[in-house]
Image (tube, rainbow, N blue to C red):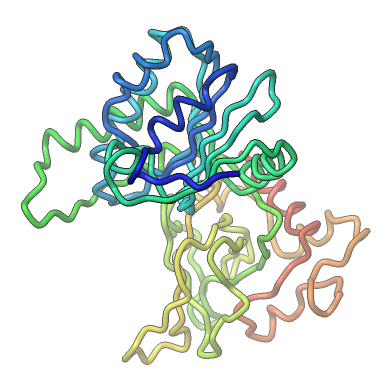
Length: 345
């Protein structure tokens, strides 16, 4: 292992050095150079056959405007050089890692503060380490694989680039830019992904004196969901909320918490705590009232090999009838309910 910097050398040179004898490169970086042309010109003759790219694509981020050029240039250069490629999105990514492999086995890797940009690799004061410890690199690759990320298809990549480019043409950025641009509708595309550290809750929407009407729909994108005056400390970003309508008791869909909880100051509501949840099955939520997935039916269809609820090891959701704003579910029962939702559409 040795320490790298951009003072008496630079990361760009070190990345080129670790490409020797490799046939695959993993690039893991939140920010990217807008043009990959020079990088691929210097790859010529290196023997690289595949490049895996993991980066971020965050809604309403100014970085989206640069990412359009980055992704277009990356894909185009891979095609020109007959290099296969994959693009993964991890919007919690902050680390920067560059690993070379030969026949699927790691050769060398760089873990650093330097983004895969010209400034990060050549100009900024950045430090990192380079190692050829195969066991540690395998462990690192497995950790990267284990965290939740989304692999974009060629079609999704094209849609992302097109949507950003269209926005750029009709909405020029001001000197003090703030943008309203979302691409999560393309990235998530109705895909269900669950990581091992998620918790699962079932949550009512509506109250007994104001039931959830059957003509109403929750958002097919991001929905604000509310909790009682007791702070929902058990609910955090990444958790799954399976929602049902008070009155009909039918399932409305399921959501991943992406923000919160926040306390709504000055409100007189009985439900002053709020989270934002991303709809993970929009097609179901659009037609929830046409399906007969009720609180009773989802329990009746479960085989009870594992309890329904997490904390009290119970086999019923009766607590919902007494005004609880949520009940934590076992992973097994939650996955049973999610499968009922997804298999209904």
